[in-house]
Image 1: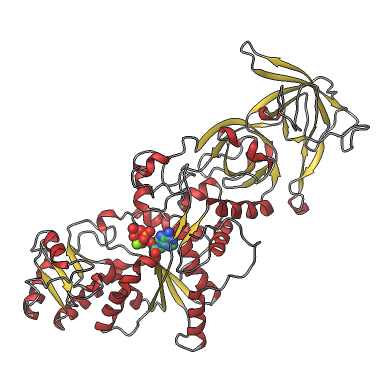
Image 2: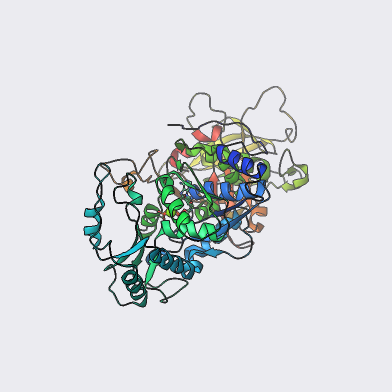
Length: 568
Ligand code: ATP
Ligand code: MG
């Protein structure tokens, strides 16, 4: 297993991989004048991080080689497909930063052509109408070690087959009562070649063709012809389709079509600590385990977007994990690292307090105690700066105070000092508790000689973030953790993946943030100092009215042992 946990620093060019090499050679030798790829999702769910790998490969290659990449919906299974999914998928591909030429393509656009090719195959005696039931068909199919047997209906005449197929289309037969099958070889070692079904009868309302059709083409038959009709040069798919490649080629070799794309397979991404099965993701949504497909804990592109992951971070992730035919099992920390790196450079820094503890400054003097201004990013002066105001009452992080501190404590304790970020050194003089013995307030004093200067005669090591209570605005913080507690939740034979849900995957806290963050438009990213990278919620954050921030990812360093313990 190749578990990647560390990686090279950001580089601007894509690493070479075997598919890239094939494309390069085909363009160099003139086999193809230009590159044409496609991304072919089925609109039966939202896209997830695994799809992002395929999107970045297909659209990325097209970009790099000045080719084109189509977005094509594989909409051949009407009972599971929905317009909502198709719309979300388009939104996700655009959000990731890619564009397809012209209109979105749909396999259903090719239903008439697919039907005509099927009649042509029947006319060449290469397809027949079968009356076997699904169970019987399974019996006849054989196994990996045993040959299959010909269907008793295999020797129907071309005329009979044409007549029956036309009547299938006309709706004369019940669902599932007949199929159209290719006549290839029931003894083929590859089961996919044992007279595969290419049409089935199914009365289901289709999102685009409505009730026009009651027969639908199967994926394997549809996919290769759709690729050829679009002039695809390289049809890139995941490894489970390797055994289907002989069928892909067989169909294109036996119909009259001038284009024969090359199918090339690569390994699926498997991301540890999450799942990338659409069926299981749907289960999480339907059972209400998460709030929806865009729940920030979901590995869907909608979820990651809402959480605050960035398109550039996801593209960088896809670049780092690479393309190959060997197992592609990647630790979640690789994805999180890509997010941190992207936001480290691009997100302005402000202060927020998630679990507030009140501080009353006993020596605050109006007109004397001064505010300072601070830049939004140490490496980016062009981000500008703001005043960090101060007033007699402050908020600090409850975890930054300890009455009986552990050894090595550098934050605040009774009688101890810390530096308030961008402000004075402050000493805690008294602790106020409620009836239950909980610390509810601290009385502190500032060393007035320490604004922008080191204190004389002593070192103050700790620096904490804080807010002026008179200036801060209330904010809701949604603190996300991994959805599962084990690396491979769906690999346990005895226990269902739902048994491994992390009960602390979401914590909601009411705290405070610098006023500037309230004005931010939804999806604005910030680093809240010492807390992590946050994003103004797409839906619930209302500029000027309600501040709602999702934690996309924590900071790498010290924070690990501060708030994360409580699932913060
Ligand atoms: P299903 O077909 O079971 O609904 P799927 O994950 O294959 O699920 P598709 O919508 O068919 O979903 O996928 C679209 C494209 O994305 C396919 O080419 C597929 O190979 C690719 N893809 C899906 N999952 C991954 C993954 N984990 N890693 C890389 N590529 C993936
Ligand atoms: Mg699929």
